[in-house]
Length: 265
Image (cartoon, rainbow, N blue to C red; front, side, top):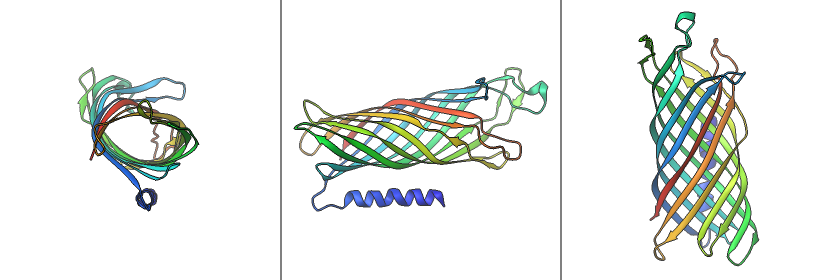
């Protein structure tokens, strides 16, 4: 139900952004790559595991200008990638618990968000304002069957996360000498549902407030075509979940930094 509500709000926002007497719309499609890192830690800071590597992005964006001071940015993105897993076994048998384990974790996911930009300080070529919005991120973390360093067979499992979140921050837009846009602010998950395949349980990690930054440089080719380069940094973090059937998701930290290359259509 919460996923449907979030998706409905985003669709309503997209519909509103497309409705205007004389809207100025720009749509881009492109690809990107991000340096991704996921860590899980004990309450005392001891690290259980670290995953790191590249994930690859396919991105669609659309911007609609309602007035000179108000516009909307919609983004839909899918991502995939296999990242290095550096962790340890988890077992009720002390002889099989805590043995170093190296593998590859596969990620697939999709996210969508709509952001509203309201400019207050507007100069001849630069604008400064606030931004806010809502997003939905769904991803699968697939840990395959593998072997620990002692040769013991380790069964894999799949975790599926569904996260609805809010963003709030500031935005700066420059038209001269280059077309640039900088957004910086905080991100807060409203809910996080985690579904584990084996055993079949659902956990709810406790979200915390994190930060994000996106910088875009627009390169116009003509009146009807352009390219855009985006650099971004984003973090998601949640504290240990409440236990369910003896299982709990530990303190988890997800960080991504990368770039996108987009083309208008």
